[in-house]
Length: 395
Ligand code: PLP
Image (cartoon, rainbow, N blue to C red; front, side):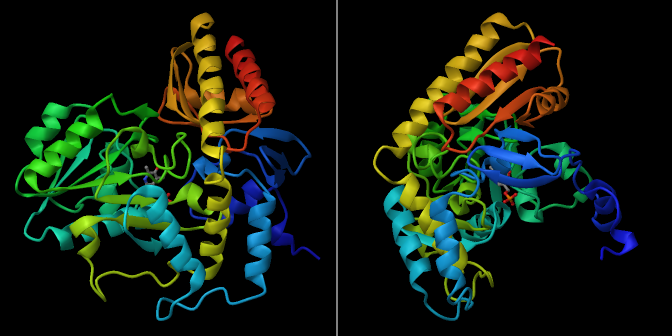
């Protein structure tokens, strides 16, 4: 029998039981399959959030379910005192897919950014400066927050890690002026996600690479949101013709199971020695098995091409909405990561209107509606989503 204290909606019980760090929507998720989620009242939603760019293969994907089933009957975790095959195989496959050399595993995006910052300190001793960008987002832990140049996230948590110089995103000249002999690393997103779905202007990443090389600084690319196929290449930097020194990756890598990693190459890959960094759960057998299952799908012939093709379809549909709807000012994105820039409508309000039309989306700032659906979304689901967004904007 349910004890009386546990009566009420999940929102009511959650308000009593959880720290209020999130402004959650009043939707109780009960089940899901593919691009669809169903709430406890039996209402179905087209999920264009995918756990904020996490569920790359949608919900209840058979490859992930099978990886979990077969891991469940064996050893799930042994710590990093020992070697395990799924972890080593995952590191080898990530290196080969990314052009990097070595991996370190952790459990989230913020942890990956922390590891990247520590690796940069170790590989570039005596260089206290980090260069980061306006509107960036790299996570909530204190190190990652220190390079997250948004007052709304940093405000109450000072003092942060010192030595971070912030320059405008996309301003190659300002970045080149900031990157000097005291800089250990530059931290950048290829498409700023939380900051409004802003793709780097053409040539910006190449200019950062050049400035880092000239100053002897490391280039850290945060692929936590853009990685693992989201933008139509395995990592988004692969569409920009550059190779970073360190890559932070998480979200889609586990398809819904917590995993993060950094990938490093060159002398950055030699920065850490035994004892310099660690994570109890990092690279555990369950997470590694699931990430290997995600890679089986994402790296299969034709998958990334399908993301590109479907992304173009979504982008064209959003641009068509922009051309006829005054409340939609612009559409920007790459692959299956899109932002619809709004004019005169708050993104938060449009998200609610779309709930009423059975579509889940998420704001990226006050005036951008973000669409990051499962990479397995079908063409028919894209068409359906577009027509519901169109209708919600007409209201
Ligand atoms: N970096 C980027 C680019 C992100 O988008 C996020 C999360 O949205 C993070 C880091 C932090 O990841 P996590 O929430 O897994 O710590």
